[in-house]
Every structure is written in structure tokens, then in C-alpha cells.
Image: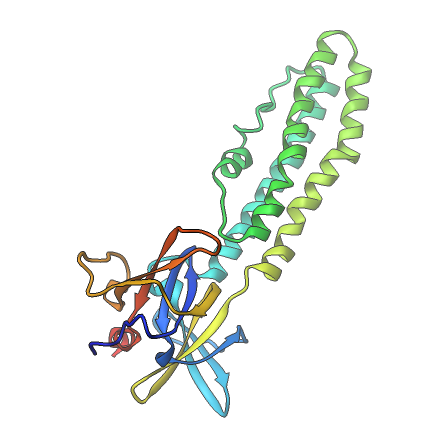
Length: 271
């Protein structure tokens, strides 16, 4: 298959876990939005199930799992569960601070927003989805503000203004904490709306099958192709990646790599 990867071919480029992958147009039957999938008992983890397509059904493979990453559904579930736990942490934090102020106990709550469990996670967080990044940025100000309440309450108590500290906590509970909880609660709807998947239907010989991919980048020709590869690509399903393409970012001289897949090798893993 000497001309499998040619500069004269068009390529569909999509992302998996933030990395661009590409396939030649000759392998593609269709690209559609994600549809409901029916699970098949005892199927390998890379196979999500079967989907309706035209007049029949096709096996749907999870390309994320095949390449060694978390499936998108698991990634979403873990993110939502993490946000639920971190929300409860901050409810508990306010309740603990109230208890310490009301009962004249030493104030021991964490006042550094970078050292609570959410703060440590938040400082490391980044997504390839701009909508999710923009939403997460909204946590920065109220999260820092709520931890600063611990410092303010400590100073008020030390200066003999316990009543003012209690008022501050009541205001915080009815205002700042509510705003922070609303942000945590909004994650579930956001990821369902924006962390979408697409289905690419392929034809390999006499066989049609579908793959779930994260995001469709473009359908076009590439500016450079390295094939055969001079070094091995490591990772799950590495032998499916047979070339590296490069495309020019719009309005820039910068070239971005895309891993080119030979789809004819994919089904060999399941034969």
C-alpha cells in the first residue's frame, strides 16, 4: 500500500485525549454525531457496543480505550464525582468554621486555597476543551474568597469581635458559599453539553465498523508526511499509527503533528 499516505490525499483529523490523529478519506464512510449504543455482553473493553447505521448495526469501538486512555464516559463520570466531593468539602469547611467561632474553639480550617483538596486539583487542571476551561476559570475568585473568610474570622475573633465574625459567616453561608455550590452543581450539565463525541464509520476491506472520537478538527490535505516512521510510536495500538503528518496552523508558520492511522490494521487486534 505504497500510496496509503500521500500529500495528494485528503485526511480527516480528529482528537483523542487532546492529541490529533488522522485517517485518509478513502477509509471513511461517514462522520455522524454520537448516538445511543447498545452494550454487547462479554465484549472487549475497547468495544463499546453496537449502533444503528443506515439499514443495519455496526460495532462501535472506543478509540480512547484502544489507545490506552480513559473512555470519555469514565472521564466525565470521574469529573462529576470529583466535583461533588469537593463541593461537600467546602460545605463542611464552612460548617467547621462556624462551629469553631460559635464555640470559641481554635480556628483550624485551611485558609490557603491552594492547599485544600480542590485547590491542589484545580491548580493542575487543564482540558483540551475551551468551554470547560472557561467554566473552570470561574471558580478562581469565589474559591479564593471563601478561604479568605477563615483569615477574616480569625482576625475578628482575636480582636474581640465575635459577633462580627458570626455575621460574616452568616453572610458567607447565604452568599459566597451558595455561589460556589452553584458552580460545582453546574459541572454535570456542562460536560454533557460540551464534552461531546463523534462517530467515524470506516470501511476496511469488506468490513464496516465505527469508532468514537473526541472532536473533529478538519477535513483537508496535509503539508508534510513522514512515512515510513523513523522511530517507533509507543502506546496502546501503536502499530495502527503508521505515519506522522504535519499541518500548518491557520495564519501561522507553525506546523502541528498529527498521528496518521492505517485503519486496515485496526481489526487485526480483534480477530
